[in-house]
Image (cartoon, rainbow, N blue to C red; front, side, top):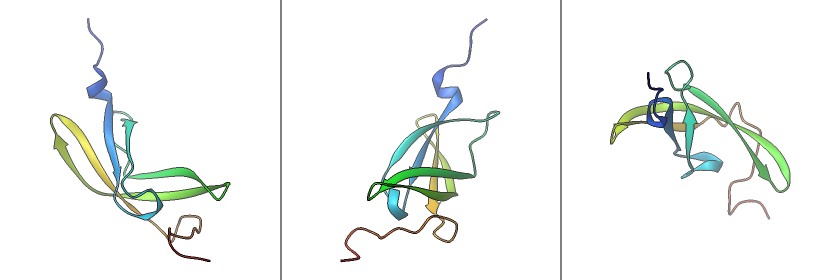
Length: 86
């Protein structure tokens, strides 16, 4: 009996906007499914900040699930986008 391969239990998460725009992560499928809403922690000026992202769409990329996530500014901790402030 063989176990599941890594490709069967992970998916690619791409953050398409917000403070993590362009970041791509490998995430674990939960009970064979991806998460429709994810939270990510990041340090902003030395302070841990919580960002929420919601599923935008999914697709198969070379046999692996690829999920794009859109930033939920209303539910996330506030932050100053790069180039603003000062």
